[in-house]
Amino acid sequence: MLVDKLSDYATTTRTERLPDDVVHAAKRCVIDWFAATIPGGVIPPATLLIEALEDDIGHGDATLFPSGRTTTIRTAALINGTAAHTVEFDDIYRDAIYHPGAPVVAAALATAQGHHTSGEHLLRAVIAGYEISTRIGVAVTPAHYEYWHTTGTVGTFGAAAAVAVLLGLDNKRTAHALANAGTMAAGLQQAFRSDAMSKPLHVGRAAEAGVLVALAAEKGVTGAEDILEGRRGFGAAMSRDPDWSSAFADLGSAYNITKTTQKNHAACGHTFAAIDAVLALRVQHGLDPSNVKHIVVGTYSKALEITGNSRPTTAFEAKFSLPYCVSVALVTGQVRLNAFSPERLRDPKIHELISRIELHVDPKMDADFPTHRAAVVEIEMHGGQTYRYFARTRKGDPDDPLTDEELTVKYRELVTPMIGDRSSAHLLDTLWKLDQFDDVAKLEVSSKN
Image 1 (tube, helix red, strand yellow):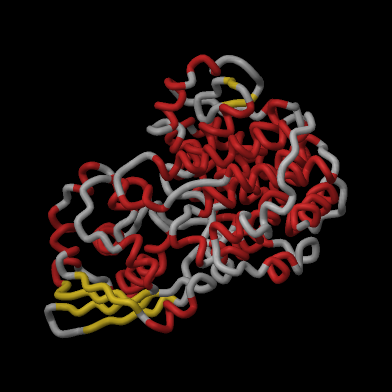
Image 2 (cartoon, rainbow, N blue to C red):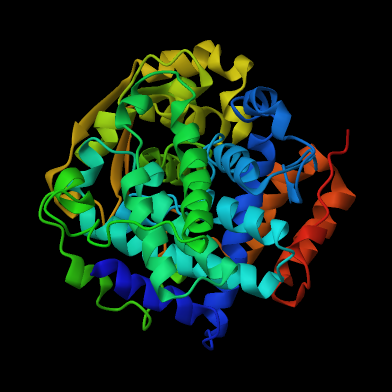
């Protein structure tokens, strides 16, 4: 059974010698998780979940971020996992069209805090969760992505694997945790198509479900061990002819966590290549948006299917609008959180520019999806000049990663306004040394308010 192979890997991860670059990559992923989670934790739906689950607050050793309020492991995984996916700044595993950090780190961190686990063991759990879930994601992609939100579905496996490592489950119980993760996995892409709170909730639910199935397996709850490859299993129901053998061939010898994308923009990743192209042209040619006559963007079809909305009216819709993101990038020179403020959303210059944008599918880029995310942008000026830029990848992807310094800048930009300079700096310093930290429950994160 496939889950047996995966469980063998997970249990080995607890004690095997891990390469230094893999441990470093895991630290980056945890830092990036905090960068996305802390601003997401002060807005809906995370704040509304806290109200809805008030009876759970104040019980347990897991922490909600950034408030510092304590709660149970499952509730922390749910709320923090939801917060991690809310501002659209969480990491990506490109080839699986999947955000591993939001569910995996949320589940692992809550469990590590609840069990007073060391930072080293937290990192090992995170690595196991990334390695197992990214490969499941690759196996079912791209067919799975037609209807399913991969982070809500595949993320359940990653969360379950990470928690199983932290609980010290043996091979058989880990296999049962993964088996039940498969039947808990859900999240429909229809949630992307409207201004709803469901999309981040998928991710919180994946984190919570991963905790649940691992805790249940610890007590002896069993699952269908052929849940991945069975005739009525995850692969058959939610994909088309997944190639499991190829997906798992390098498990244990290569590490997908070292090829994680850290986002450079606060929007849907399908907009990023076009944003990068526009920003490059803006810098190279000192473009004045008022002198732009026409913009043509060519990219892959899934980008246009999900982010082709040219009339966004809310922050959520704007994050999933390639025309809006291209326009705000050209007008302001960045697409960070303030790009989606009420003032920006009402800016007539941005909406007037949107009216000049033409989108089309580039056949070569479409054929290369999902392993490559590219865009070509042509900007015609009123003076007759035409400028063209081909973004062969996205800034932050494995072939053009954020440096540690750039990741630090992102973290500070997102976290410092929420918790203040001192708390932000102290947390960052701790996270860079997480493998030396004795008890994750002692992590200090407190709001400046």
